[in-house]
Each structure stands twice: as C-alpha cells, then as structure tokens.
Amino acid sequence: MHVIVTGGSSGIGLAIAKIYASRGEQVSLLARHPGRLEEAQTEIAELPGSDRSRIQTISVDVTSAAQTSSAIETCEASFGPCDILVASAGVVEPVAFDAMPPSVFDEQVSINLLGTANVVRAVYKGMKSRGEGRIMMISSGAALIGIFGYTAYCASKSALSGFAEALRAEAGVHGIQVSICFPPDTLTPQYRHEIAMRPVEAEILMGSVKPWEAERVAAKIVGGVDRGRAKVHFGFSLAMLAYFGPLIKPPLMWWFSRKTRKITGKRQPDPAEGADDGSYHGK
Figure 1 (cartoon, rainbow, N blue to C red):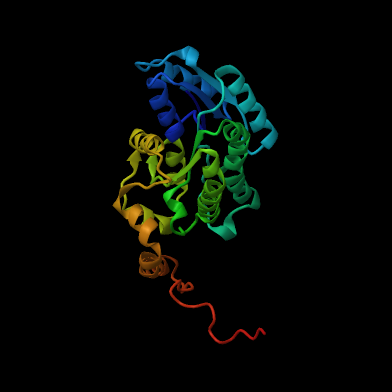
Figure 2 (figure 1 turned 45 degrees about the horizontal axis):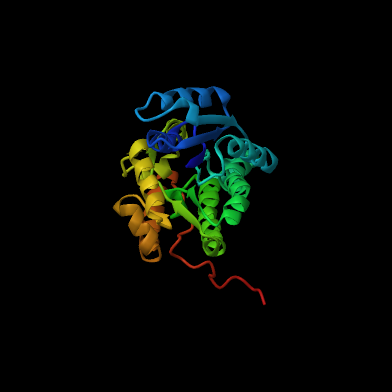
C-alpha cells in the first residue's frame, strides 16, 4: 500500500508516517524543507518494521498546483498509485486581524486550504479511475469555534470542513473515502512557535486544555482512516463543540467576551447580541 503524507517532515504528519512505515507500507513524505525531510526519513527508517527503501521524500510547495501535481506523479511513479492521502501540511500565525499583514493572512489560507485542495486534486483522478482510495484532511479544533487572533487560521481550517463534506458527496459513488479530523493543541515544533505568539486573549479560551502528544493524535487519525470514519474528534470538549456547537457557543462566547473586556479595558461587541440595533436604514 502507498501512503502519501504532506507536512510529513515533522509534527502530526511525521507521527502518522511513522505508524504506516512501521506497518511496512510504502510512504511518501512531502514538505517544503529538504533538510527536515532527510532527517524525517532517517528517523522513520530506524523504527522496527520500517524499511528505508520503502520511504521517499520530495520537497514541494503545496500552494503551487503545478509543483504538487508533479510531486505526486513522481511519488506514484516510484511506489505506485496513492492508496491513502493524509493532507497534513499547515501553518498558523496568531495575530489580531487588524495587525495581521495581508501576506500572513493569505499564506495561512493558501497553505491550509488551497494546499490541501491541490494535493487532493493530484490524487483524486487516479483514485476515481480505480474506484478506490482514502483521503484524510487535517483540520483543527479551531475550525469549531472562533478564537481571538486566529481569524486566518479559523477561516482556512473551517473551510476544509465544507470542502471535505462536499467532496465526500461526490467521491462516495466512486468508492473513495473522504475523512476530516479536528485535532486539539498538539505538541509539535509548530505548536512551540505558535504558543510564543499566542495572544493572551486566546489563551483564556485555549490554555485550559492540555496539549496532546503528536503520537496520540496520529494514532487516533490512523484509526479513523482504518475504520472509514468521516470525521474524527479529539477529547470531550471538542466533541461537544462539534455536535452541540449551536447550543454551547453562545454562552461560551459571552463568557469569553467578558474576560477579554477586562484585558482590553474596552467594551467589545457582544457575540450574543444581534447586529441590528434599529439604526440600519436599508430597504
């Protein structure tokens, strides 16, 4: 079996690649940094049950559809058609919206959303022609609720949910399994970078939940793929948000708004209040 993992040089992607390599599967790792990919390949090859000859790496920028398509062609030329795709490449830069440079906003949307679409597109035609294949998209718990300082990240990760659902409607009749997962904070190199930038307002909402180990997250994701689950959630809090968000979020966001006002010293718009205060004079 041939497994392709984007963002496979570190974090959740690397942990997922390790699981499949330990099973003896052929694994292709895609990421931007050649040096990190080489380190990841060596790390995986040292695992029991793994074989370095069954691990390949390709440096690619997934925001480029052409580069991504070419990389997938190279992967499949070596190890055969992609049986499982795990789209794990992602980036997060938490900054308040009005302080966030447009380039930073655009990068998060490009990598997290368009990068996922590019790699899915690159394997989809082959899976459709064969009448089989499995696709797992890595979203985030941040897709389930708006978080201060995470406008770009929340937008891009929640968009993946709509993409996965629509694609699942199209792909199912062709024998293709489309799944999406919503991991919590996870102890990865990117998390350590993110936490140093995280606004104190966001910490109020997110800091109460202990981060998961990447290996634990990866095991749950791979288990979801194995069982053909359409969605994979993590922990009680995120599962409740996923299933009962319309009931839970209004009081939660009201509480969060009160907390952030104490920090800023200013009254911010209350999410529980309607936008129409009677002053709008449209048609």
